[in-house]
Length: 330
Image: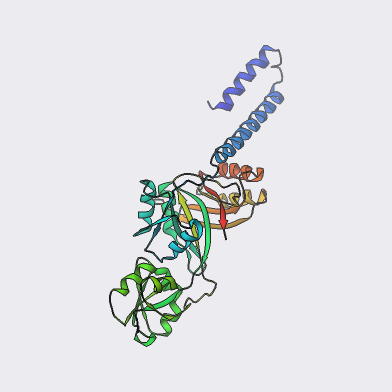
């Protein structure tokens, strides 16, 4: 027997004692509706309080982790958001998450989306795997440049190393000049690597900062196809931290494998007049054609519409988790 049925049974007994049991249906219907309203109100308040307890307070002596080496675009994003705070490099995305888990660093800063090449799916999967949160994000304009050792020219370069995103973003330039692209773990790491080779035929696609840091020549500037090329970086934390000026909410959920379930979630967002800015799906392991959905929309937890929408989405999904309510830093 569920809780509503149990309360209804008790209420019937009370009606019987008061000689009101002859026609109890209208009373019971009203009673059930009242109980449901109370439960909904409690859920709304509970979710709101849970989020408000996570008010953002910047820790002191923070350490930021990023993938690559000094000069990486993530390094630039870290300096943009955290100034002179200490930054530590890591070999790959997972290493950053492990460092947060083991309290080696306070936050990790990671790329999650690029305007030219789309989402970086590994980050979505790792956020879910580690159950971490997003506490900030920022957009960083990306200028990809062809770098080579001192004295090398464009005609000398036969092969370039870079992160897969760097290769994809400069595909047209590389094809035009018959240059072969080879994947490397990071754009800045590739620049550091070619600086040690002393080979004029090998270049790197990296930032201008890398040319300065690793004593390389800039052979060709801004070679990315999309001149508005921008990467969105997110700051990842073990704890949910919410800035009072937060203006964006990220959630993830999965749904019953039934017709109309995703439509209902989108309708929930629309019904509460919220502006959805992104939706992404990722496959669920060992469940063919079932997905986790990641949704961003504008809002702040102090807005009643936001709390009501979150509770409605939670009700209409199998599992819903708030990934963060944070401020986008321009």
